[in-house]
Length: 275
DNA sequence: AGATGATCCTGTATGC
DNA sequence: TGCATACAGGATCATC
Image (cartoon, rainbow, N blue to C red):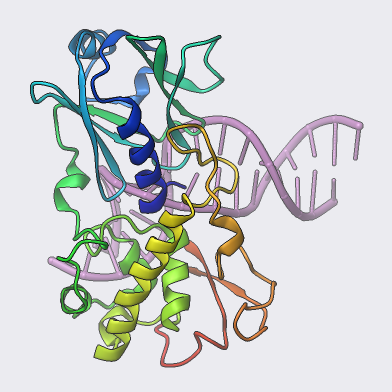
């Protein structure tokens, strides 16, 4: 599931390959991935454009073209955006192919078809994103203000992209472990010290995962079709029943905010959980 | 308004 | 072995 570190890994890879390349041809194989534009109109709009740069905001990728036009791309669960040599037929579940000058292509594949592309428009969710967790604007005080008065479990509030941009199920669980906080704690009940720990933990796990190129279970690939290496370093996510790396207690799993949450009942058992 | 739950989708894992 | 069912999750929408 691409979260901030995975999307940033894609951005880094594409930013090395796309700028300066012209789109020679566009094939729309799966029109469902285009939001608010017809396949023919999209192809006509993109064909002939030259890539200027690749940006990221939260889990959204931004493909900029010379002249100011842009695409926004969200990979959701299983989307892959890969720059590769244009050799052979595209793999199964490929929905978009952009043939580039010079023999390469930009390929968008997505098994579960949740991923979306927008042309020259900012999608609704992107307009209300919280701060970038690795920017200076994301401070412990800002996090504290975002949590104040919230009655929902801290895990659910961390998954809300209006709180912080870019956290998903993996790194929300990892950050709560590092901060020593139970995922079902009521967000508004965290003490100032706990908010500071959580703020630091969010930045720590995201920076670590970024360094290792993100987490790959089955699906994630970066912009060069390579998996991430952070899986082996996960502290709690998908480790139910395995010993806590810190204290040896078996990791437990609990459904919080409709999502499975993994935590150490000993390291994250302090304080009062809401229920 | 804030919180919760259903929805989309299909490959993989589990259960019988 | 084979079939049926459950499960995974990001964002959006509907319903409290």
